Image (cartoon, rainbow, N blue to C red; front, side, top):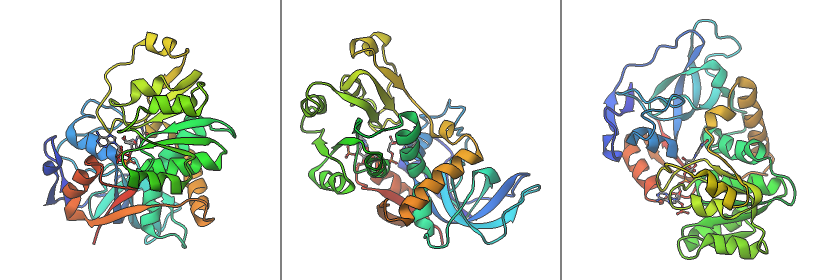
Length: 329
Ligand code: NDP
C-alpha cells in the first residue's frame, strides 16, 4: 500500500512516500480502509523525536505516522464483533493513519453517522476529543468561569472556544494575527488578545479586574506557560496540554505557590480516552453538537497524502486555521 514513513527523527523532510506492507489485523483489531487522515501537532512531536522516550505515544522506527483517521471497515481481526465490512468509522490515538490502510484496536473505533461526511468525523476525533476533555473533564467549566485559551484560531482552539461558550464560560483567547483574531471572535471568544504584540497577562488582569482566570489552557508551552501560570486567580488551574513553541523542561513548585497556590497539570489525551465508553461518550457529544449546528468544524485545507511533508511545514509555520487533512485516494 502507499504510505508515508519515517525512518529517522527530524524535520518535515523525513516524511517520505513509500510502499509499505498492508497491515493484517491482529486479534481485537480492525483494518480500516482510510479516506482521510488528520494532521495534528502530536504528529510533529512524534516526527521530530520529542516523544522518543514516551511510553504513552511510542515511536519505533521505521513507522507510519498519523494518529487520526476515518474510512470504512475493510477486515476484522479474530474476536471482533459488532462491526461489518464497509461500515463508516473514525478513530484517534492509534498510530499509522498516513496510509491507505491501518490496523486499529476495535475499541477505539466509533461509527460515523450517515449524515456526517468522513472528513468532519475525522476532524472531530483528535482535536474534538481534546477540546472536549479539556472543557468537560480536566477543568469542567461552569457558567461564569473565566478561561484563557491560547492559539484560539487553531484546530483545537476553535473547537475549545465553542465548547467553553456552550458551558457558559467567559473566553479570553489569544491569537497570532489580526486575521486569526477575527476567526476566534467568530467562534465566540468574548475577548481576543494578540499575544505577539501585547503582554497577554496584563490583558487578562485588566479584563478580570485584577482577579485572573479560573483556568488557563496552554498549548503553546515554552513561550507562554510561565505567564499563563501568573494569569490565574488564586488556586486556579493551568492545564499545559501542548508545546507548539517548544517543550517546557520544568516548572518550579515555588512558582505555583507565588502565583497564588495554583495547580498545574500536563495531560495526555490518551488518559482521557481510556476506554471505549469514554471514547464513545465524547464522540457522541461532539457528533450531536455538529449535527445540531452547535459546533462549527473549520477545515483549513485538504492535501493529498503524498503532501504530508508540506502539511507538517504549514502547521509548524503557524499557517493553518483549523483542521488540516490528508486525502487518501
Ligand atoms: P494548531 O492548529 O493550534 O496549530 C498550532 C498553533 O500554535 C499555531 O497556529 C500558532 O497559532 C500557535 N503557536 C504559537 N507559537 C508557535 C510556534 N512557535 N510554532 C508553531 N505554532 C505556534 O494545532 P493543533 O490544534 O493540532 O494542536 C494545538 C496544540 O494542542 C498543540 O500544541 C498540540 O500538541 C496540543 N494537543 C495536545 C493534546 C493533549 O491531549 N495533550 C491533544 C491534542 C493536541 P498562533 O499563530 O495563533 O500563535
